[in-house]
Image (cartoon, rainbow, N blue to C red; front, side, top):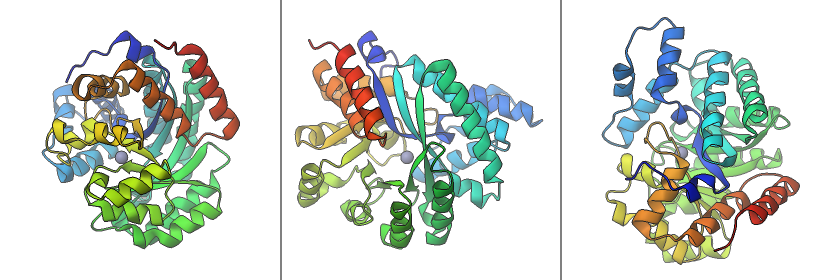
Length: 335
Ligand SMILES: [Zn+2]
């Protein structure tokens, strides 16, 4: 994969819709956290944490990185650093997953953590002009009750830039049906709904997410296996949060050539490109666009469409979304 992105891609206004805060912490920042917490180690040792062989290894690596997120200040720091990076690639808006399920499991004081998150967001918005909304993510394998607790916190902070909820993790151990009541509760609270689905399980898991009334699908890698599902997703223009490098690095997709991103686009699905966990997958949003161009033959015109989709598929309030789309249309020059 090319690590250099073209000036066109770097300057293209983009939104990112599938981005985990904890997976965006680069090794240098993690080393800083280590030092802050009196942990000894070198950058090479930190980098070792980011190495894994498969999806389970990745989940363990993710967990190891989150162990060093302890105080509100830690969360503030990683949020601010993330927004700085977004700005550098013209990512004007991001909807960022926070693994609230993991915080609760660790019995952390989430109310304090949230203050740190918000301080980081406010400073990032002020210094970099980046817009950010939070999505509270529950862990599938922790079960429905734990998810309910996560969604209740999302409802509590709904007026403070928390726009929606999601579930991620092990689709086999935590099938969508378990979360029916929790999702209904979240919808009642005015939260927007998304779900990781069809990442490590088949199309039935994506149907399951649609049955939860998920408005967007995280990954949807296996949707192509079911033509009826593809038709449903296309007709309803359900946004797909596609994360190409993620799928390759976790081994959910064996070969780059097997990735369905181009097929989905040609079939008329609403495709958006995302990084998932940019530090853990050694990518960035600009690199994902570059990859789409180099490996799947997306033209600049196609990339414009994908970038526009990213704003269209956002959970921004109608007026703000329109502002972004108007800005996009005014600044992005047609060939
Ligand atoms: Zn994800």
